[in-house]
Length: 85
Image 1 (cartoon, rainbow, N blue to C red):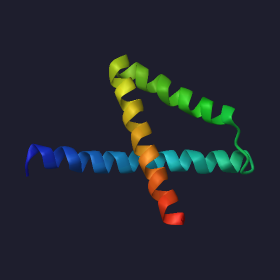
Image 2 (image 1 turned 90 degrees about the vertical axis):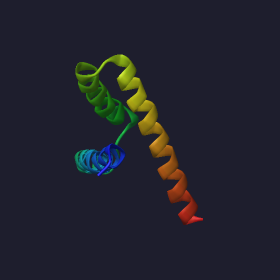
Image 3 (image 1 turned 180 degrees about the horizontal axis):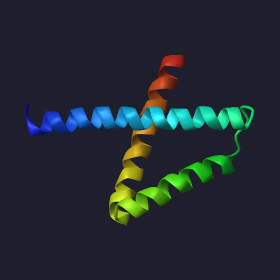
Image 4 (image 1 turned 90 degrees about the horizontal axis):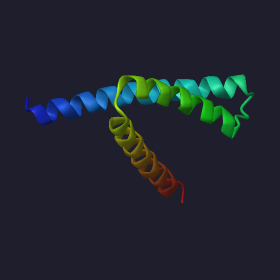
């Protein structure tokens, strides 16, 4: 297996695990807020994630992760909206 395939395999596996853990947090948030989360709830969640990331990585690496995650999220939303129309 090539290094490129190993990187993609790890990305798929680690991304999938991280995404599912995020879904779990959102489900817990929905339960705790009786399905009425505020913007501030999301700020708290993101702040705790960023806090951890900045402790583990340098600022440039964290900024790259943030931009990459935003790009993925925007593309996924576009795909979902395209399927609904």
